[in-house]
Length: 424
Length: 73
Image 1 (cartoon, one colour):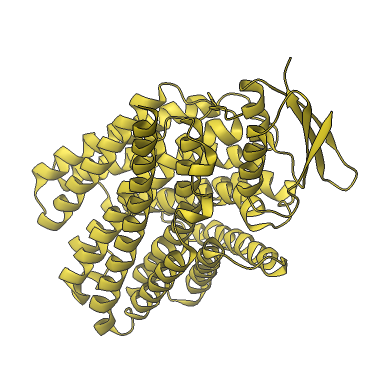
Image 2 (tube, rainbow over the protein chains, first blue to last red):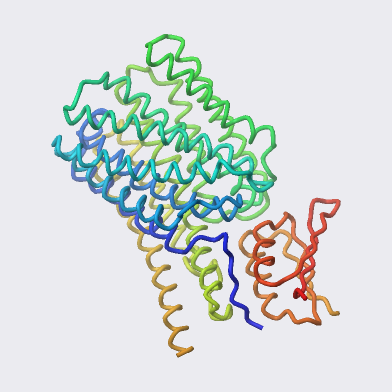
């Protein structure tokens, strides 16, 4: 007996999918922009091209996928329904996509009008998302998902801080008023990369690494204590950094050590398991090794070295965060497509198994291309001639990811259409 | 009542869910699915509750779960 299953907790497929199908193309755009700009783009973190491609990655790729994944995971994993999820998803996606493109153009061209246009669009998208998700997170979490939701609460609060600081900076770039740009940018970057990106990746990994990588569950004390500890230290660092106090280096060092402890512990757990690694395992290895590399460089490189923030940015955004997200996309998208065909009542015999939507050979080759691109880009800090080939390879690898996800989505539509033809 | 034994211990998600969904397709009032799984399948419970199935989950001493699924009513 074939039964069409319904699962009220599951948002419509379009809610998460539109974010996940769009995101790789922003990463591809970041690669193309870097290839076009050449080595001068990475001369410092302040070049227009560096600022533009940083935001193409953090907003266009990371925030885009993370927003889509959270809208999907909160109801399904934690039993927390996001209010008005369809309009929130539509508005957030539209604002993120158009606002990121406008902001990148604003940085590259330096035109004040583009900053004035980008800031409210992005602010509306991010705050709409943050408020809707915060309302869901304020409810009681399903047992077993607490470790994930504690980190998510802090990550979403951090996103709110990042968005407000970002709007202030955009207004300053547009010449509306004067700000201490260096200090505000440091806060904006730290809350964005550590408070939002790292804590969200860590919170989600508490749930998905034991589940998908067959490792034992993380120790409960670690999952409950790590995200709040990082947040408290980040707040202490912010006060010290704002007042330019020398002691600000201490909370920064402790945050680095906590992140290293998380990465080292997870790598140890992954090394102990008996199962053969899949493409997501490889991406986790790349991600965690990059995070350890960031911590090492944080301590080893002189704080005044202009290459330090560039190298840390490449390793943290491309190596740590984007690798983790890329690997998770290979789990999430095929599962969603398979699952929604089941919900649509299509006979399961006619639905390809989850592992058949994107073949292991294609995804592993894409992972190799991505890892090679990251190695070239990290190496380009010392050998600038690697910038252009590394950037082109990065653009190709992320376009490949985008094409694999689109091909899977096309198969979903074809299966739906074939089913409609049969039943007609 | 005959049992459909489903041992999904050691399988990575979402394969256990794939297997149980396939088994639900062939479930009749005269059969029962007995699933053995190495973690508590929380998302599955909500699928079963909302689609007219009855289930009973028992935690085993070794951390595994035994979930018995029948058609409700």
